[in-house]
Image (spheres, helix red, strand yellow):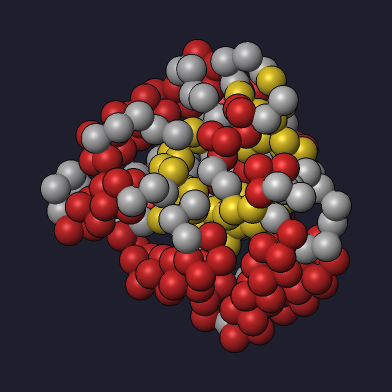
Length: 248
Ligand SMILES: [Zn+2]
C-alpha cells in the first residue's frame, strides 16, 4: 500500500503545563521514535490555577519551539479543574465519578466557556506565534455551553473520547475510541492496560493514542505505551490532526 493510503495514527500528549515539564519531556522521548514530530500537545494555560504559562518564560519558549518543530498545539481547558456547580444530577455524577473533578468544560455556560477559550487562545497564540490547531476539553467532557462556544469561536478541530470533528461545520473527521491509560486506581490501571492491548489492533481508519504525564510514573504503563506505538506504527502512518481535512 502506498504510504498515503495507509490508515493513520494520531498521537497526543495531554496536560502540557509547566507543572508537568519533566513528565512531558519523558513522554516526548517515548513517542518520538514512533511518530517523530507528528505530535499534538494539549496545553493547559494555568493548570489548577497555580501553574500559569507566562509569555517569554523558559517554558513558553519551549512551547514555541515544539510548535516550530511541527507539534500541533491544542488548547486543553484553561484551569483543567471543574470549578462550576452542576445543576443536573447526571452531569454532577459524570463530573465527580468519571473525572475526579477535572471536567472543567462540562458545566460552563456558553458565555463562560467562550470567555475561557478566547483567553486561552490569545495566550497560546501569543506564545507560539501562530494560530491554535484546536481545542480538547479536559477529560473529553463537553457541556452544551462548551459545544456552542467552540462554534462561536470558530475553533477548527475538537475531539472527545469517541470522535474528532470540526465545530464550525459540524463535520465529523474521525471516529473510534482513543487509546489512553489511567493510573488513579489499580483497577483503572489494569483496565487501561487491557483496553490498550485490544484497541491497538482495532481496524480503524484513524487510531488516536493519548498519553498523560502521570503515565510515566508506572513502568507497566510505559511498557504498554511503547508496545502500543510499536504495534500501531507497523501498519499506520503517523499524521497530524489537520491531515484529517485532506481525507475524502
Ligand atoms: Zn487533561
